[in-house]
Image 1 (cartoon, rainbow, N blue to C red):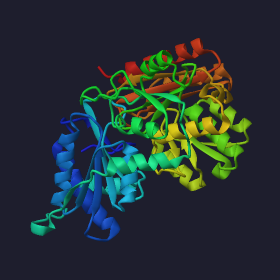
Image 2 (image 1 turned 120 degrees about the vertical axis):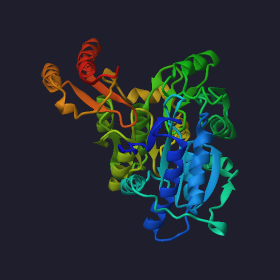
Image 3 (image 1 turned 90 degrees about the vertical axis):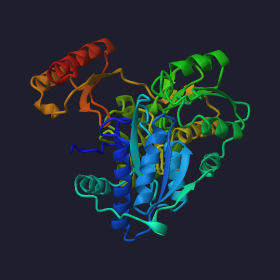
Length: 450
């Protein structure tokens, strides 16, 4: 049995190995057993939610059955953004949270994400314990009679989440037209209601989920549709979310795409100028553009980088006492308000800066000058250590010598997909594209998927 948990839970094609209803059932049982052991008590309460994928109810039924069979309580929140489940888990003083989602992946995929009682990512050691339990005999409790777990349809979850978000920032959006793209995903009801409650006129696309159209040509990974809509309606700003609502990509009033690097620069510099940036530091990952380094340092802010993955950003933020961090992909953390990355909350944070300064998003974005960056994804059949790929290190060294410090090369495997990612930054966009294609070809020849 290969390792199930990646950087963001378990992920795969729904109803195919390994992500079958049987696995979901067994994970539910072993999750209860693990929490009983770690928390030193028999009673376990869990919150479970999902995005809009057709396979969501299938996996939810199996996972819930596993939890109940081991004697755990299960509060079902229905369709709700991932960060909403994190917040409800904390609000209900539950022992953990479960989200069935594959985030930005195509609809056929799904996944199992786990949260701690604080609404943070499940500890690695506890994931390891679940893995170990799954490999052995099933020793989880087998409840019977009145010991079988209780299932609660928690229909107040969405209302709680909307109320919470609406209180996070004292921002009046009256007179603003906001275009949003919900990717036909978990934000499709919540996001329009939050912005309208705060006074905005909202134009929404990607708000009609069918179960099979989540992320399809829309949302944070495909903001072009939102660009067109924003220009057509003359909106002041646009916000694109991914399928489970934990990412944000923005469109400014000129129709330009602004990713997580821009959000971190804008929020970090604004909070620092108001004395509200804790530790005077912003935490991001090695994928951040060099322009973000330049922007933050010009504002007197320290930048700290981790390996890719919001859990690593969160861990470093906690270690340093930071309140702002995130990834270029738009997974942003504002720990003064939420323990999890939240696309809607991140949009509200940017809107608060716009209102406090009286500046548009385009004007605020001028604080960051991006270096040209190229990212090439290579489908792979295996993931041997990058340094063992014959000829790759030598070619990288040659390109690095050519750039002479005025750029960088990063090659890594995706933690959630069968991909190798080649990222290059440099002054000459055409040249770094050629370099990236060259390195991608080497990887493709050696380990490329058929």
